[in-house]
Length: 551
Image 1 (spheres, rainbow, N blue to C red):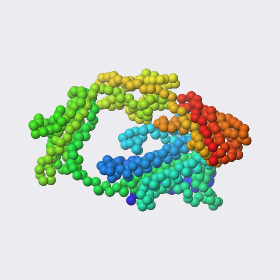
Image 2 (image 1 turned 30 degrees about the vertical axis):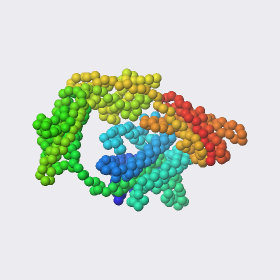
Image 3 (image 1 turned 120 degrees about the horizontal axis):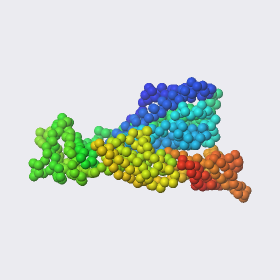
């Protein structure tokens, strides 16, 4: 059965976390604050390492699914669902960290990103070999890291701690439902939200108050990173348990098939074609003989005399020859080995590849457009040519190397642009060769969706409406990590048959609005209109109206 055993390093971090949490009742000295920063940094590092461990399990899982999808398929689907719901909750917690820093510092999202976040390229834990951008909070640079007034207001008064708790409780139910009921006892879920919590004088208190009331920002961030660690632990245990429910020894190889593994099937003219030919389930103690015939669909007794003989070693035979002409090329062959009886057996194969002239590939890494006033990551490549030998240019805006990703680029578009053309030359065998160009559409970033407590319409509890305290603009189905700031809005309701309107600057409910909400009756409607927000491009957007009814 599955089970995650903590390393000594993780046990030490957990112990330090408990000690530091207990010290929150005391005045926060510089030494204690520095200790929180150390624990938080260790927690972030541990989460990255643990993510790699989970990724290894997913890779093994996917491999077994490819071998036997009929048997492994249902378990693999549940593992992918565990990955999805875990990613969703981790993304939400990362957004909470961003929001609380922005709220504590009273600065807009772009300033927060520039001053307190570092962008770097990291391996995609869900797609090995792929690099993705990651934004890491430099907690030490945040001036308000030792303050707790704004954090308490955000989590307790605005109800965000309660929302987080509900999401965690929903996650625990969903993640456990993926495992067969008889094996759920071996899955470790450390996300405890219903335990017994007490104040320093022995009074019982809620999970929300215990973790987020009068707690400094540095401790809040550390707690949130600890929650991410517990999510990763739960995800690992569930996926490992699902994997263990598959009897890997059941897989049987009932036939031997020849396989061709080319280094590439797309070659620049003049370059070499390289491939490995091997037999699956082959005895590595044998050295196979390979017969290759170019231009043929198969080798027969009639044409084997014209075939090229290649001797293999250790079960593998390597092919290589110069790609002299453009176009599609094919070849056929056989692998000859000795079976357990001593008889020679032939296993046929065939393959084809394309030889093409140099060509340029330019791809926006997030979407098939460039967006105004945001950094657009771009991958530019030419088959057969190293990225460092490519020299791109752009018709408008700027294109610069991405300092966080070797070989990639960042494109920035000015306001008013409608299209841009990326061109490139490359150093190919000592000469600069024009590799072509690619045209891209240029758009402004889409409008966010204005929400109150995650809603744009429908019924809402009065206390949740009051606790929400603000209109939050959310980017929906958009790959870029950017945020809008609401600058003003209008609230409309009907009281005693009279239409009442209240205006607000910023995204927060005014005191008048809150007082009206406190006196609201069941079925009373609240309309939020004329919602104005400023985006990263500096333009003002009019967002969707919100229509809520008190339950």
